Each structure stands twice: as C-alpha cells, then as structure tokens.
Amino acid sequence: MTVDCRDYQKYYRKAMFSVILGLFCFSCTGNKQETNSQVKNNTPVLPVNLIYKDILIKEKSDHILIPVSISPDKNQEREGIFNRNSKKTENYYNIIFYSKSSGETSLLLNKEAIIKSFDFIEVTQEDSTQGFWIYKIIENDTNNDNMMNHKDAMIAYISDSSGKNLRKITPDNTQLINWSLIPNQEEIIIKVLEDTDKDKNFSELDRATFLKVSLSKPQIGNEIIKDELEKKIKSYIK
View 1: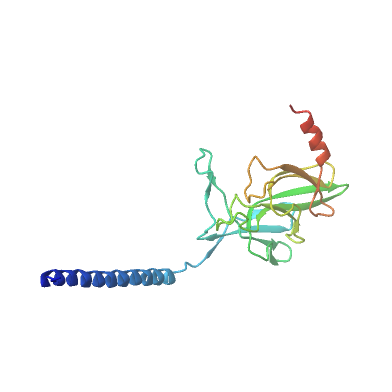
View 2: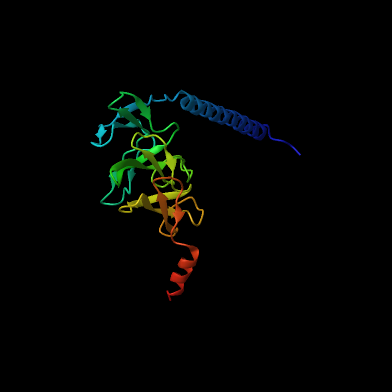
C-alpha cells in the first residue's frame, strides 16, 4: 500500500496543533488558579472599629450602660427582607457597665457572642427594690450558615443591675420568644421555641414551651406545661 506524503504531512500538522493547543490550555488554567489564589490571599482584611452607642441610664441603678457595636459587621442583616415591616436590628458585641459612684468599668461578656436585646426589670420586696437585666444572646452559628443572626438559637441570660453574676436561664438550642414578670413574686415566665425536629432551624413546626425562672436563684427554668397535659389537650382535638 502506498502512503501519500501529503496525507502524512497533513496528519502530522493536526497532531502537533492538538499537542500545542493542549499545552496552552493547561498553562492558562494553571495561571488562572494561581491568580485566584493570589487574589484570595491578598484580599485585605478590614480593621474592626468599635462603635459606642448612646449611653443608657437607669435612675435607680448605680451603673450606666454603654452598648458596643462594630463596623464592618459581617453578621448585620435586614431581617425579613421581603416583609413590608422589615427592619435592621442592632447587634451588640458587648456592654460596658460604668459605676457612677466608684468610676470603675466592667464588661458584661468575656467571650464572642451577640446581644440582640436587653431589658431592665425591678422586683420590690417589702422595703427593698432589686434590679435585673435580661438579655437575648446568640452564642453560636447553630444552623452553620456562616452568620450569627435571628435564624440561630437565642439564649436568655440574666445579670444583676451591675452586669455581674451573668447566668443562663434557657436551654441551648432554643430561641427566646418573650418573657413576663409575675407581679409580687420573684419569678418570670419565659416562652421559648425548641428545635424539635433537630433540623437546626426554628419555625412554627417546632414546639413552644414556657419556663418558670426564680430571680432569687436564677438558673435554667422548669417547664410549666408537662407532656401529660399536652397529650390531654391533643386528645380533645379532632
């Protein structure tokens, strides 16, 4: 069989072109990966600036509060963005307590966390009045979306009026909904939402429950609605 030299030359040129094209593409891919890596490594890290919010003074307390936010805040977001009533809620990363009498300052937190809200309550027993602060705090990114926000567990904490003796009063992996002070008693009732289905999200499908917490000895509260009572309620529903 006779091989045409022109066919051989044509085949040779095609083979060489394929080899050169392959080497060129490999080189471009390598350069692109290297460039992306360099961009990622050279991305400047913006410094975090502390933002001191307006001071909060309670007439019957010796302490002045200075909430602390940060900028930029990677956890800041507009909650319920598709809702007409959506609003941007504040993130506080600590609270400074300043004593008016001694001039000393102290911090509420000694760890990374976000304070979503804090409220002051007073309890009067006979001739004495005692003040407490109740906080809604996000401690962890419980749903693993790389943000600490309203979708994560929110735990209730309580401290005295000076920000000392901070104690947890609701369980982990729950969301604080609201709380109510029982008049003439050193107790509060707290409504929380449990992650019943363990999907790391909180919704109307999860179980809500109520906890009773003593202010004289604050600790994680006891449920006031027992399983037997829930079963009885359900038995009346057709």
